[in-house]
Image (cartoon, rainbow, N blue to C red):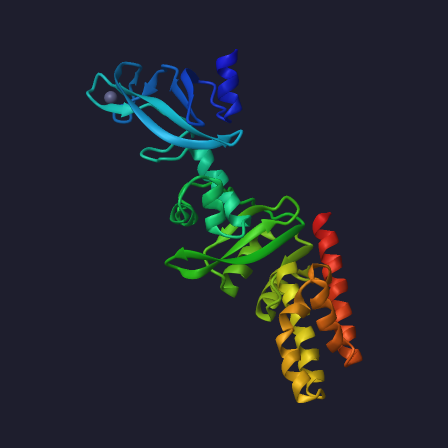
Length: 314
Ligand SMILES: [Zn+2]
């Protein structure tokens, strides 16, 4: 049935949806739907009724399909019970009352925002404002994540800046294999993380996370002895710090002129060698030649970056 195909194509699974009309205007799809008429229990007296009171159109944005924005025009039915009570039909997770975006849109945007480099980036991809994306983080009253009673063998822990009353930073527990969030903790206190891991972490064997010492010990206390892997972002920072330390130490022995100029190439040293221009390569090689330790530190940094890039590709 072609009507049903369109409904499936845009990812609405509900079998009670009927396609009323569809059109494409100015690269935007307009899909008009309604639900099958069905007996509903009155929220006041529990009498089952399918007496229709009226219809209202609820318009909302849905997930893009083939790069086209989709606007759904949902012809929302209201029933009226013999007792006088009128009420909206149940739509089983298509859209929440008064929302301008579908439930699946909310879920996808939230998941995207957790792994994307910025809220603005997500906002662009989903055709909305940055503040809307930020608000999604707060609106966790809609349970998009069902926390498992037991965590998987490998987990990732990271912090992000949330916006709740209970402390600015929150923790996200994610599955590094599927790159999906598992749970969000209200704050990043040691007590919170320990209690959480004690309850659900019996199967955890490996944790990738920030290298903060306090964190590490909290995780270790709660889980026994899991393997802790520094996550790549934080680990990179340590590599850069180490390189800087060597540079600062050896440039002390340079001629004051070279010392000053060596300070200025700090940024170039962090950059991947293959991303440097020929002139930049010559410039940093001059300083690497001035001290073997600097050359060694630089080679280690390059080796790490190469390793990191190959693993990222995998
Ligand atoms: Zn009633």
